[in-house]
Length: 236
Image (cartoon, rainbow, N blue to C red; front, side, top):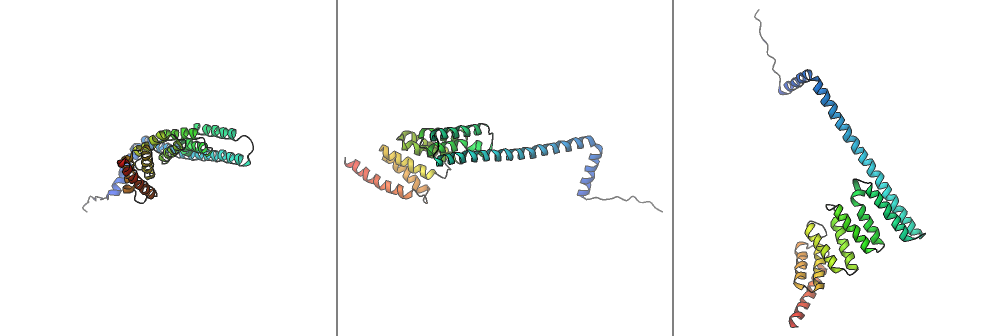
């Protein structure tokens, strides 16, 4: 009886599995060490995520408690309100300094600025609005903080400082959702300075680039006034 050699043909998947099996058989120690290392990394990552989430939740809970106590104290009208504000600010600063990530770390200075603003403490509010932007320049709220600082400067008559702030927003946050308002504010301050051509330039920027803006009508009304002022200037 003639003997025949039978060749078993395996598909790609079978060959791959056989190769892996042979590699594991020949390199048991390497496979074990690699598996342990991968599992260790996974455990560390998962533990880090859990720790991060727990810490952030604890910080948010403490933040809410601080603000709640401040609100209750103000509503009750008991004690010195200035002392209450100082105590609240100090507690917020301590919370921010002990935080390394998350909402409190990223937005704490904005909250402090907002508290100062609520008490009409303009310079203190602006100090922390600007500090917030310095610490979190890429935050969604950064251009909003700058705009608010500009408005507060205007409220105390420091128009040059406000103008610098608005120009900074235009330069650094060209994709901001508030750029239409910034154009309007820059145009308005140019108009107050008597620089009518520059004022018209910014009103036109607003009208052309943001045709749906709520500031369109205000800009058009101001441009109408500009026409009157320009004619009067020519006659003079």
